[in-house]
Length: 262
Image 1 (cartoon, rainbow, N blue to C red):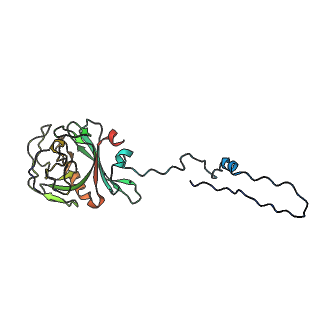
Image 2: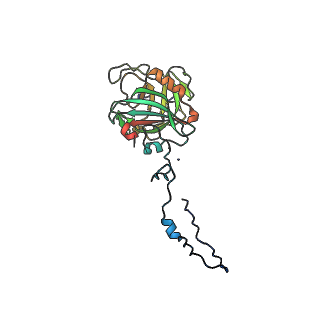
Image 3: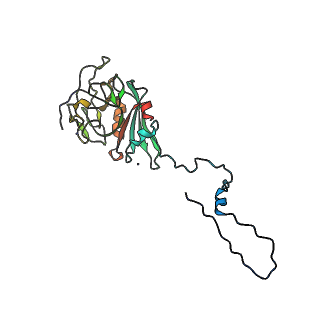
């Protein structure tokens, strides 16, 4: 990302057996011998009768897995905070792809996830994705990151996230395909990668150090790949800005499909 002047902003029950019987003696002539009740060990070996109308299944006793966001495997899903009910999933085809698909998901009260926005086409970094981002590698960091601050050169379109309108959200020059970059920062959403949450996206403090890069945003698409950011068409980004709800503790989950499926 271009450098900016700072203005400022991880959730048997064992069956009992009847083991005793009382025999009463009296004056009546003895009748046929009573059958011997089964011992506890014998009863334990007797298979339980299946429920009428269905066959027993080896999976009946297994607990149901918690619902997952479509496209995410158990490892990736485990990184989504328990309190999060909004997740923006950015999926690239391969490790080296610089185009992606973006879908906003919302968790319902029953715990299941549903699409609530998109799918939207997007660009990411020129060389694709990396699990170990460094400044200048031209790759977008893979992972699950909170999103909580927004801003831009243009006025707030109705965002519920804190929005910092500032003329310093300005850029000029051309992108990797010779496309003009002007207007790319008219609206931005800061991804909490190597930044201090709660500050304007223009803030340049890097908790992990400058060598780990920073300034990774979701911003207006300029028609080509980026240095590290994710871009959406202007109208799609404005729709996303209005949809994101701080009370839902939103996160972005991003990376190539095979990695997210882990």
